Image 1 (cartoon, rainbow, N blue to C red):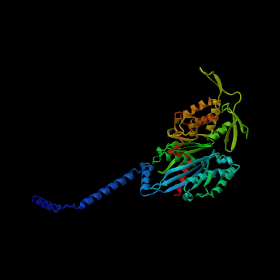
Image 2: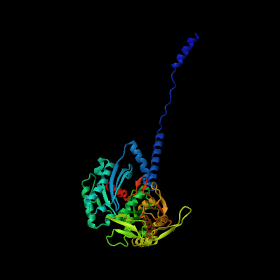
Image 3: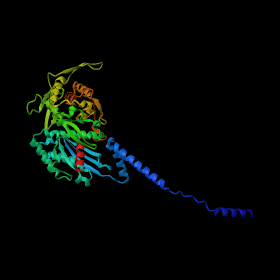
Length: 468
């Protein structure tokens, strides 16, 4: 009986209806409040961008947004450019891949191909066909870098620098015309001006752009940019953003440069003849007869004998003095005896260099106040003598080049026959030519974030933004 009552009780409970939940009605005031909050938040965000956009480096927002756009909605629009740098000592091809930023179509650099070949096309002044073969070997490598479907949209440009400027006009034209005909047969996008000699001003501006672009210094504030000193084989360029009346008064050297954050004035001057190889050639041939190729000079160590030096299509064979040369007594120790070693006549050579540099350079009063970044042969010689690390680059002072020069010049070394002369020239160029103090800091790099410091990047950016 009891068990029957329990079953009925449980049955009654299982069929008891659940209490009704009271649903909350959405009040109009709540909707209005949410909408008002959304409008206010959007207005604050818009105001923030309007007020602070010019203070935010252009690249910071793009990378985050571009990554999200690529991963979420698949947006990625690559653009390419192939630039051939026909320098005085060799030719380089740089094949760049950028993408258009999702927010505003700014170009963001993704990667590049860098390949190099020697000698420069000026060495083929009497044989343009060889120059074409040299350029073709580089172009074949660019084809492997850029997907074929983009070839006909990719601008191809060759710019020769100071090496061709030093050639007789007829020889230079023959070389350029041969390459122009070759370019017409390539699958890349070319125009009438795709092959030409680059003006020294453009070389300076594009190098400065590249450096500051890679260092991410374009924020709309010109004071945040750095100075660029580019030492080539036949010329050198000095470029920076000017701020003093004295610099700005040099109207012929002030030009407008296009940057991702807008146009800004820059000072740039190209010094033809103050490239490392041009200066070396001048000193080595000081006492030589016209067209003489076997040279004897006090500016290499007496142990140096007929070392080959190639410049501007010509071979020279260089030796030190064989008699009446300077010597230095090297004291002995418990294991060695005192010896007298032959050395370079440092005083004579440095005096000749000072005279040569001052005849072509000029003091730039504002330059020492800038952060100075140097590259090209500045980097090469600093690495070779152990002043900086080959991979990371580094920071030294002008006096470090002076000390290195004096040290090398006091050694009998024929494995680096021109190092004494080259280091002496660099020190004198910076201090006596450009007016830098001995304690001026120099930032010396070959690459920034894995990208080559070369005017080619600046030219590629200019071409692609102009075309767009």
